[in-house]
Length: 127
Image (cartoon, rainbow, N blue to C red):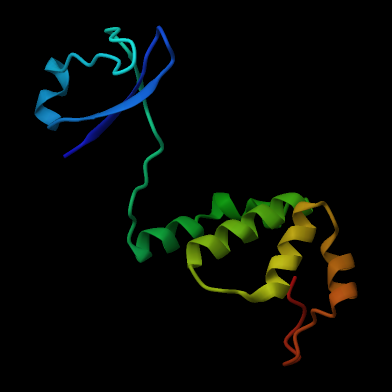
């Protein structure tokens, strides 16, 4: 059964009521603290479950990848953090350090030099 959050206009008390969706229009919530009627409805954040395919499609959207071309380390770090979060994989402490340093504004070249992030297989740099 859905829960609805409210805040009293008189005493600012937050409270929740649980009623069927079909009855929300007829509901007449009152503040449990002071009894005042007509509280403000509070809209909370929601989560939407997406399929793995939808998440990967969203990550591959070319408009989202412009951060890689912007040469702004903060944007690059934001994108890398978002992609890691969407993947659900543990990418290790080095990855976390790289992202933190990018978000702080450090250049990818500086990070790569200080951490020796060249690809050990000889395939090129990680950036």
